[in-house]
Image (cartoon, rainbow, N blue to C red):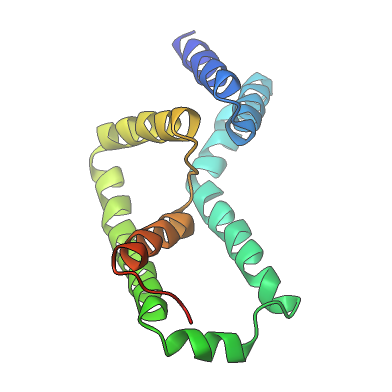
Length: 152
């Protein structure tokens, strides 16, 4: 019963915060919870879901390359700018920090609960997005803006 209450509260927060992604996630989790063998489905989602999400984000990131909106020339041009190098450094930093974060989440399950609460609050009330590459981009944006740099 406690799980249903928590899902409902997250759903309400997402609804009032107008966060469609979180609303859909709550509905999907609730529907799966109603199905037979839900525990099996949940264990697969918990074990593989983040990797699937990263894969989908990676696909979205590669689409502009596939469509020709970003070319090799654009990439080489970006490497010639301080802003480009800051973006690369932020991507590396997020990847390394994520490695340590995953280890901590496995060792200290309470961290996961607090991260979920923090992510929900940030997504719903601060219009944030729960996505690693976006975090790297945000970090790069802040540093580039503070230094007054650009990719030109």
